[in-house]
Amino acid sequence: MVGIELRQQLKLQQQLIMTPQLQQAIKLLQLSRIELIDMVHAELEENPALEARADYAESRDSTAPPTLSADADEPATKATSEPSDPDVVSATREIDWDKYLENYANQPSDYAPQWQGGDDARAIGETQSAESTLTDHLRWQLQMTTLTDAEQRFLDMVIGNLDSDGYFKEPPIEELARKAGLETDEAEEALKVLQNFDPVGVASRNLRECLLCQVDALELDIDVRDVVDRHLPNLEKRNYQAIARDLEIELEDVYEVARIISHLEPKPARNFIVENNYITPDIEVQKVGDRYFVVPNDDGMPRLRISKFFKTALKEGPEAREYIQNKLRSAQWLIRSIEQRRRTIVKVTECIVEKQQDFFEKGVNYLKPMILRDVAEAVELSESTVSRVTTNKYVQTPRGIFELKYFFNSPIRRESDADIASESVKNKIKEYIDDEDPKQPYSDQRLVEMLHEKGIIIARRTVAKYREAMGILSSTKRKKFF
Image 1: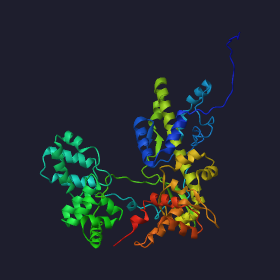
Image 2: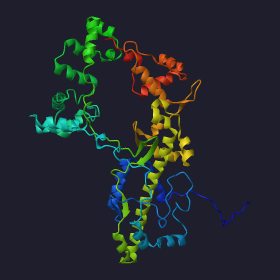
Image 3: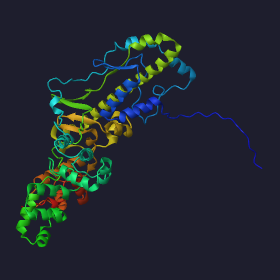
Image 4: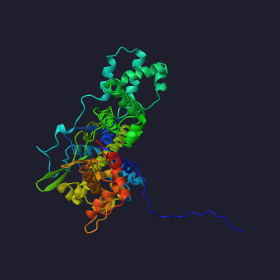
């Protein structure tokens, strides 16, 4: 018979605890710049201890609590974790906030970039905006019509549901017709009115309908309409003989019809912006002389500080003091986390610039193979942290704006030289295709052979994958017959 007994046992072990502050640091690190600005504005509204000043720069101070580690995967130290011992907690809550607030506003900025752009700083003109969106353009035309209120409501909903190419693919027309109080056939007639707005073919539900609208508006030849109506798949495959046999016309006439159709617009929204999506760089790389400098882009980012009002509010009583101290602590952790995020992005970008010096000097063909581990080891962070830092973060360089992840490329083997970055191979493929004879485009196998002549060993399926990733058609679809 086995005896059962209760026993108490002490056990000492180390454990990583995800404190609220650590979770906040991880969250801030992976936010894009726009998301971070939105989050800061939300915190400014919710936490009365925070305020924004344009001339303020947060800095590190010996009297402030330790900086929160941005590396979420490293073991948490006592400096980065919320103390669990009651005596330590009590001591933390007894921080001399009066002295802290008095010194806080007088702190100089601890972060001063090595170089600040003057005349070479980013120009306002580099941020472009559209004068009129497609939605505005269509709604302006809708106001000029004599349609009924129900028909205008229906078309307004259609305009609001156009995709980035100007097509109306969802929701079903029956659903919007019901919401607008129309019958389906009435909605179809109203949609035809919209499809004849400028640009013609907008709000079409497929390519055939879009091109037919343009053919009818331009009053093109019947053969052109027949090809669009019945032979778009053959046109796409360059199967001109099948079109000629079915329509009983000469092959040369098919070539002429195809040439006319090639001048129609398959994407009505091409010259408009459906949504204003901007990319604002988180960081800039500027060249001064022979050196490159990494400078954080703080334009539009509220600079946070703790409100001076709370210096006097601390004297209101124990209950108010406890509430204020909690808000102060939360505000301070947020400021520290944002500063740590900025420093981490700068450190990672400096490492990338150092390793990719040839790219900045000579161009994409000199981009070196680089993986997350290379940077992680150099800056002493984990790979997951480097991944968070480089996701949805953009850098403005003398060669353009790039996502930080752009600089990470798998290596492609070369016969008699160092490995080459996959992005450089893509660029070479694009250069070959740009220079090819349109009537005799290079096949994927021919591209493999041309790369092999340069010492780059690559499989045909890899060339096809890179070509498709760049949005380049196969050789049969690139071939020009006229």
